Amino acid sequence: MKIHHVGVAVEDLEAAIELYTNNFGAELTHRASNEKDGLTAAFLRAGEAEVELMQPLREDTPVGKFLANRGPGLHHIAIAVNDIHQAIAEARANGLEMIDQEPRIGLHGTRIAFVHPKSVGGVLTEFVET
Amino acid sequence: MKIHHVGVAVEDLEAAIELYTNNFGAELTHRASNEKDGLTAAFLRAGEAEVELMQPLREDTPVGKFLANRGPGLHHIAIAVNDIHQAIAEARANGLEMIDQEPRIGLHGTRIAFVHPKSVGGVLTEFVET
Image (cartoon, rainbow over all chains, first blue to last red):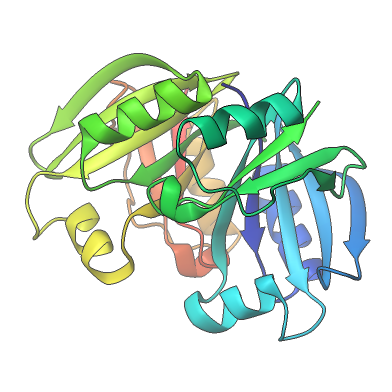
């Protein structure tokens, strides 16, 4: 098991980037947006892993609803996997509920799939193929 | 900036260890308890970082209250620092509110200090001296 990144829901992406770079010496590696998911994101290098800061573009989006319900803060954890199809198949065989039955393309341009938090003790968990 | 570990609040430590080892190939590295903080924890290797699973020993503890208020799930992120006193001093100089004004000994036996989540966009953030 290897942590690929930790996702954080933020209200103001630019302020959050400044917070992490100014206070914790984080290095901004790339930015990406996803119109379909309605979010804009920035990735900060954090050793082998990254911190993904995510700001919703609209209220009626997964991250927008998260912010409305829980406020800003830790949102998900992403695990690096070698083969996303195998990871999904194994998770389902183990009885985990997948949010994504089929992989989709994430903000890194690689294939991802989310596991439902109710199967992982309340932790929204993402597989990222690397 | 380097992620040292990600802390997860759990209701049942043994079930959570099984979940992560059986489903995600995580490796249990060590266990520790802190009577004062009223928690028992297990650390799982996750690449360069770790996942810390924390179960409260009593309801009237920080993690017990977190579980009661928010349910199980992501609890905090820990950043590795070289010098905990310097990290605390810099954070305070930058206007961040520290929960711990002075370092204390964490479950790894090294010095730690927590930054208040209200200073870090809702993310409870720990410094761990390594």
